[in-house]
Amino acid sequence: MPKKLELSFPLINLEQILQKLVSIEMLEAVGYQYYDTYFKVSLAIRESRDDPFISKIFSALFYKIFRLIALKNMPKKGFDVFLIDRKVFDFLKNNFEKNSFINGLILWSGFKTA
Image 1 (cartoon, one colour):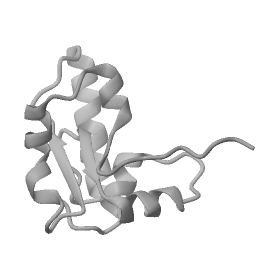
Image 2 (tube, rainbow, N blue to C red):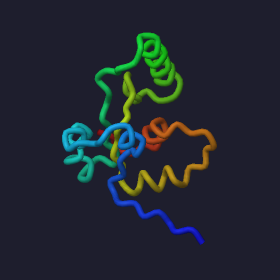
Image 3 (cartoon, one colour):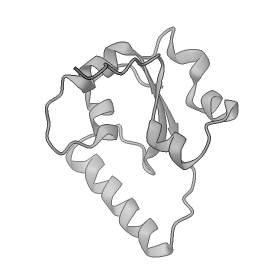
């Protein structure tokens, strides 16, 4: 029988950790000091992208359409780093969508977001 993965909370987006090391400054930018008391989700919203011009255009178009159709509270430039607590993690774990967009699911979950 496979061993269960033990996670400690807050959960940090592992994709971002693999791309770049998460520093204390990044955790502070996400609002680590506030999330536990009132907010269940803290986001580090992008200020800029180091992508080619055409990628920036398509990314901006995607987020604009996404905000119009699905979630009005999606940040204009998206986000890569987030902190979530156990309730949000359980919600995501119990969501059985086949091809899900985790950033969208986090916002759609309805938990207080900083």
